[in-house]
Amino acid sequence: LYATPVLGKDFCVMKYVASDEGSGKAVSGVGKLPWVEINREGAKRACEANGPGFHLITNSEWMAIARNIESNPLNWNHGKGPVGEGVLSRGNS
Image 1 (cartoon, rainbow, N blue to C red):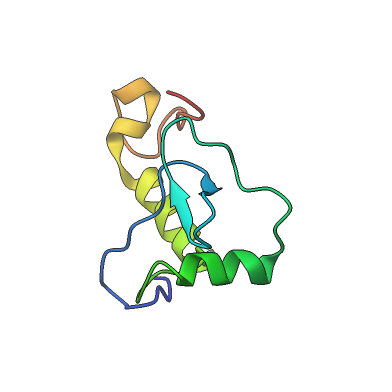
Image 2: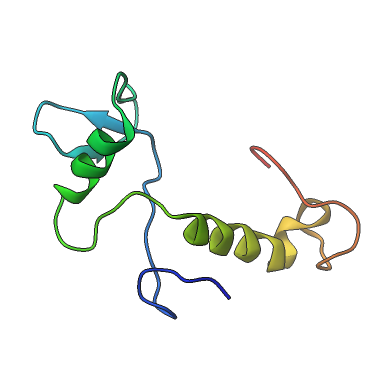
């Protein structure tokens, strides 16, 4: 449904906020401080510095994640499903 970088292929997203450890690369990890005072172009360069295939998340990737969450019965009614009935869990559910 969405134009992800390689249509039909999986993609990964950082689990934690991006941090700056002085290497010019965006890194992610538990307890790391978020990278601050960085503009969009700087963030783009920091992501791409990690190597081929690394980039800022796109709107299409965000939508693919949201639709995946929405289509999983475990995310409805506190894990009891079914999809589309009741409430979609939010936050740290």
